[in-house]
Length: 542
Image 1: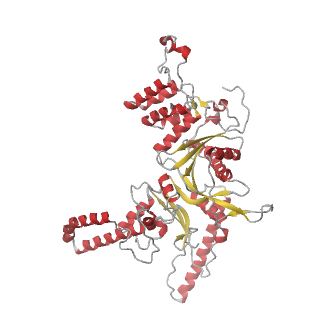
Image 2: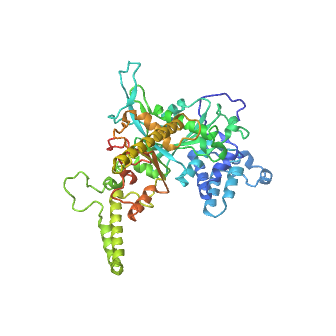
Image 3: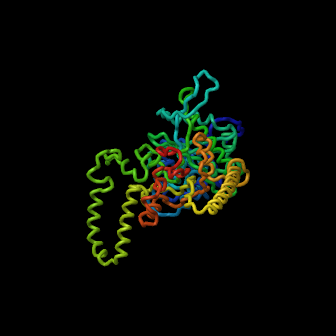
């Protein structure tokens, strides 16, 4: 242990050990199941990872001593070698037992001298793999920047280059070195890369510690900076061959850290620093500069992120257009010649439909005329849902979105005009509504942008960001004075678009009139709807 700690800008080393009695160690390890704990321990004992996670074993001079004297009162005697310890955990993996047995052996036996930050990072990542929906991810797009004036002009401004197709080269060690330079010096970070076992993404785990030191003294149990809270851990995912980045949102395990001045607020500011530092770490000035642009997609499902913001063909083909994103389908919606068979009608589905047709024939004959009519309506609703949603929005597809927030800015449908007196009354009522609406909008803008009371919602923050980035796309006031109420709609569930598809199949929602953003065509979870389309989406013209 270092007796003197000097403030430094260096990162936390992976070999830095944490005392097993620290509550953070038991908090991270106790979340794992018994099988996951054993697999993590076997991963620590691999030959290539022993320098970062070496266990407590007997030394050569201790092997000659009496075993009774050496291990007297020791419930978990130390192993004689690493291979012997590896065989012990393999035996634990082969038989049944309790999780407490494995947890106590790790903290009180084989790693009694402490667990390194690398070991805790591997255990934390294993929990992420076991519980894929434990983190909420936000997708960002890496966009290149260009200068509006020559390089020698000091007043040159940077703007998004919409014509450039440049993608930054990513090298982990260089990226971490550049990212470390952007962090504040009084906060230390530990970085750990790991490859996802099943998905084509590289995950970077960043753990923050509020301490200017990077020695073992900063990890003492009596130090307040040794609070390994999940809110101080941020995950960054880099999908393969895609100009996107997924950044997790901080989550807290303790209720005391959720206040504005607690750990929750500090972790959000650290996350903001990371979001600002990632494009700087990817840039190579003066010619290659990048920035991160939000894609308005927030979900807990990494499969959905890879489907919508990955390297495949499904990035811009959601909803009913998803059938054209399949590699086996060679049809195009722009063909002037109609195909011989519709893209949605597969031969296997036709055979299954023919078999089910005979079974349902008897039931249809026994149906009453009203029931037969309802059956035909439901059958048509299912076909309409299949055409609007395609092969997306299916229960059990593993690509569910938990929440969709939209703001409707369309004009309210006007009623037919009546007599002159009724028209004047309607005009006066409209003026009053517009005045109330303006007052409400001013109050809402104050509470969203300048107010100190209340917490900003994700939708309000997205709207403020949209207003700052797209000031030139402001909608002009309608000269006819149509009423545009402020309506916010939130869909919440385990699979939002699958639930909407079920409502369409059952005839609750008219599938022919449903807007495209309700079928997942836009590929966003936050947005503003104008004229039935999401603002800023490709092809919307808004």
